[in-house]
Length: 288
Image 1 (cartoon, rainbow, N blue to C red):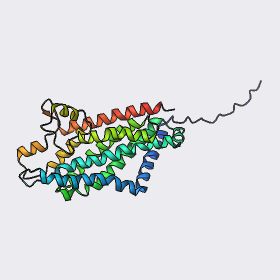
Image 2: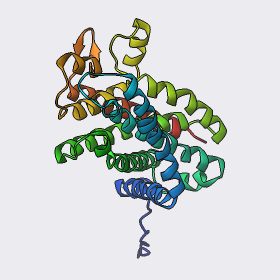
Image 3: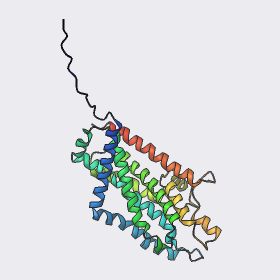
Image 4: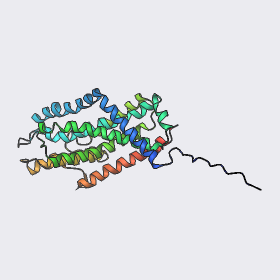
């Protein structure tokens, strides 16, 4: 008895089952963040306004009040903190796009794409970190105005440290935004975290001679471990500053009297960023 010919069944593609699907989603979301940044010139200008005010208005005023005895410009001290401030505001507020997309329905269209939800968060993190780093590059152009040399080695070091800082802060913003459904709520939460994080990092004042309670807060501030490497890099080429004054202005982060090396501080930044991004992915994956 002859058997009927067996029909061939076309292979079925399972959405999100391949690495290429996830990688494509990461690239698309990353590119979308860059396009939104490039087209919003008002956002670029307003994001730079506050750091410039801190650097030249607050820094200029404090430089006349704080005497180092060697002609050292206090704005040079503030420059690393202002760079961190630029990254902080840009990176964290870039996470608002998650809440915005959720509130206006665009996120629903992204969630049905053939990719895992973690890929969407990775794309958001990459896009936010890239945008924040580009914003900091604009501030680096002003380095010469505060007596920071345009050394290729120094600029390269600062760019690497700023990129790692941007990654950590973007992950922090995404972790907060992963379960928030309204833009207004996100803005309230962000304001609660942003200013304390900035002021406790040593961006505006040295982390030396502080009360015990305030010193303890600076040690649990993630941004502290990013500002110190930036300040070390900026202070390295400074000449004419006494050893005592250098220690007072640049005491660094210490654990029980031991000053942390730059590699360890950057390792803390990377570890915190990875942990917060992982938590953001887990929480986002549970989004309905």
